[in-house]
Amino acid sequence: MTPLLSSAGEYRPFWLRVDRLLGEHGIQGDTPAGRQEWERQMERRRLEEVDEEALEEFRRGWYLGSEAFRQECLEQMDGKVGQNHPGQIRLETAEAKADRLIAEELARLQWTGADLAAQRKNHPSKLAIAARLRRETTLSVRRIAERLHLGKPEGARANLHKWLKQPANGNGQTPLGI
Image (cartoon, rainbow, N blue to C red; front, side, top):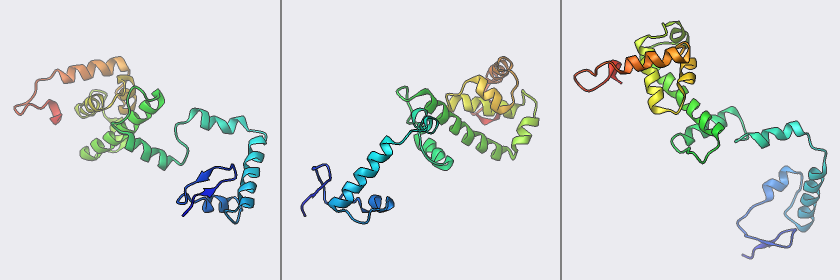
C-alpha cells in the first residue's frame, strides 16, 4: 500500500490512522478537502485570543489529565525519578510513595489517620513509620513530621535520632522490626 499524501505535501505511512481525529473535529473523511478543513480549523484555533490563565496548566504542570491519571503516573515513576527531573516531580513522587507507605503501616497497625494524629509525638510506632519514610523516600524530616504529627521538625529529628540509636534486637532488627 502506498503512503498517503498529507495536506502539507508530505507522505505519511499507510498505517497511521487519522480518521478518528478528523471525525472528532466534524470532518467526515481523510480526503484532500478534509485535510484542508483540518488545517483551517487548527489555524483558526491558533489565531483565537488565548486565555493566559488556561495556558498556565501547560506551562507549569507536568501532566495533563485527571487526578487518577496523575496518581497512576506517580506510581509508575516510583524509583525512576532522578536528579535530571524537575524538583516538583521529584517531590510529588516522594509524596505519593509516602502516602502508600503510611497507608500500609496504618493498615498493619490497624490505625486510622485520626489514630495516628491522636498518638503522642514520640510514640514508637510513629517513629518506626518516620524511620521507614526517611529510609525509603526523599522527604525531609520537616515534611515527615507534618505528615505523621510528630511536632516541630527539631523535636521530631531528635526523637527519631534517639529512637534509631536504640540497640537492635537479637535478629538484627531495630525497634519494632524496622
